[in-house]
Length: 238
Image (cartoon, rainbow, N blue to C red; front, side, top):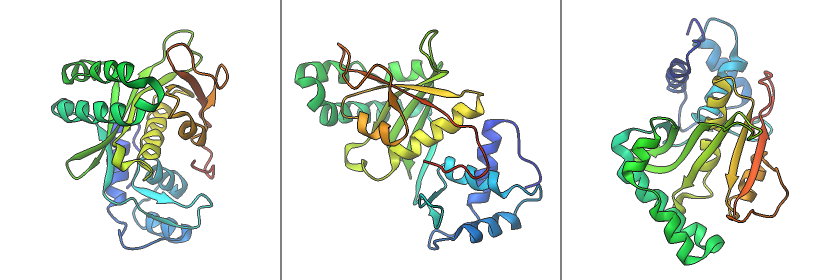
């Protein structure tokens, strides 16, 4: 790797290439990660490449940076229109099983049916949609849009869903981190999330704070916001 490209898609390609040099069966120390990165690039910035490996979802790590490992077979990639049917089914299933506790059966069903394959395909024209994949199976999704004027943030994360049986395995965290990396790449510095009641605890752990206090609005939504930190070389990745 001779240069770090300017375009987001090429950054991901370079990072994917570098990730292929890591063994899935080995747990690396930070020094080992730096040494391996050093073997495969020539512009002397292993801090940048190490962060990219984590933010793009190729490596995971302990919070103190003492151990790194390949993140299984889950990968984060852009949504493709031919995935609309499968993604719609996942979203409806998640709403019916997870959001039922927040909104009751009648409202939950209306919410679930508001998502259609056709609507997702149309939304993808103006919204950057990410999907978490394991082989050919969709495990979760995250939609990213420019925030509306007066929102108090640069970008908004919408349609954040993880397959109910896959929750608690770090997939939501991978999606949020990949989304934040995308926002930074677009020059954004803050993110708004209209959280459900159930999702609030997860977003708090990801560094998001309630804008108008802990109580949901009349729609059952809790607006939350995060100011993204600049990317100092050794800043911890939450």
